[in-house]
Amino acid sequence: MSFVMLRDGEDGEGLLKRFQSSMQRSGVMKELRNRRYFRSRGEQVRLDRARSLRRLRRRRFK
Image 1 (tube, rainbow, N blue to C red):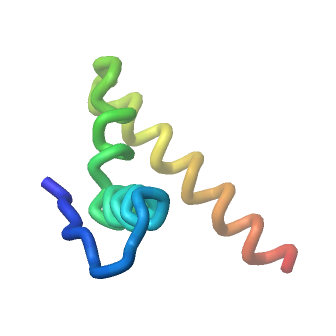
Image 2: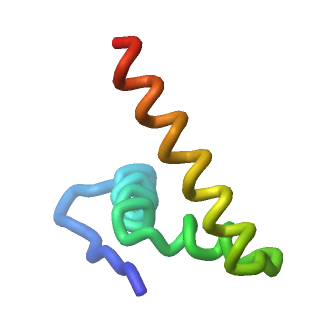
């Protein structure tokens, strides 16, 4: 679980921004999105392979 402490002179907006960035770094929201619906192991492998290919193609064209 991510948490942030209020710093001296910090407003609520800054606190919220730091909390959101810490949540993204920890990967909690990504995990929740992935677990929203059940995916079989084969389906997950296919998705991971497709994601990897997209990443490789983007790197090659840059």
